[in-house]
Image (cartoon, rainbow, N blue to C red; front, top):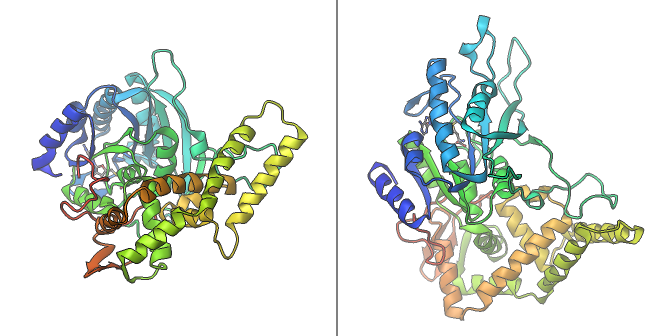
Length: 454
Ligand SMILES: C[S@@+](CC[C@H](N)C(=O)[O-])C[C@H]1O[C@@H](n2cnc3c(N)ncnc32)[C@H](O)[C@@H]1O
């Protein structure tokens, strides 16, 4: 996926329209090669022009030159986005050299007029609030970044597709008037910065937290959609997109960052379904402890969890949620039913000894997607139940030999996590989090999961 393959990636992109790739190149060059009206979503963070020491790129331009650089990128983004497509433009605090008398210039105030002149509409402005920043001496320590949400308007100016149910969060208390799946998370997001030494840490100085990207990708794209990050750095947007089953294209001028992002993306599994399967194996097959197990043992565990008849409850829960989510009349009895449902699934999740398959699946999913812990009980159980049912259909319809092969392929597709050990599979490390730091070895990706670019 480096210089030599750049042209072939882009050619295949143009011919097949399918892409899952990281490209080591100037994003202006790559964007010019992308088809028009194509991408559904961009989540990116441009260089801030603050002399940040990126590997292989000096973040220093005269202000007019910086604006012209942004103009080039933003006008290409407008061309490449579908009508109704969204750009989430994350910028830091300031361009400090531009202010009079050492004052500050907000990066938003530089980029917003450029977005407007390119044709984008400002849809919202999100504040990312974090802790753990470097203490200032002469003013209040900065504890936020902003994320401009811009939309390429369609011919009739309709609102962008926003999948709110995908990002609803648990309300502090429930009184029957709330939505059964939880509340709108609002536009101030609290998330820890990627801490030094944590599993998300790389050599890149400005890594997004995965949960920020996850919220954006879940709410403003659907599986199969194309997500772009023209300044991909450590690859966060692409990693989240891959794990949630989206297509993606990320570029960076630094070859070192692209190599590292490639490693980081090296996937645990593609899409939520296969993450669920691997979560089940790590948690219940290996008991979350490094060690070796036979594939037959792992197969037994997977079949046991997927085959539990109680997962049929998800169908019933889906119907109840549909009925209660958009009631015509909020009668007292309807409110009571909502409250009962809310309580039932919250309590189900918090049992000390879980045995219900929805709860087992939820734990495996929380292991892969930490952000789910913020969801309410109904939403967690519903999503876990539906995914487990789908996994059951996928796994139990296979002959034993084919199941065993699938498990082998899934595990061996993450060579930094699993290793073959004779007839056994060894789990080498247990790192929770969205996907994990593993890499597909050449040609080892499971056939069903292998995508054009891997
Ligand atoms: C703020 S960082 C992005 C960090 C990223 N969001 C993450 O989670 O790691 C900006 C990145 O843009 C890259 N960059 C700068 N100019 C570029 C260009 N013209 N084309 C592509 N990448 C560029 C830098 O190397 C840097 O990695």
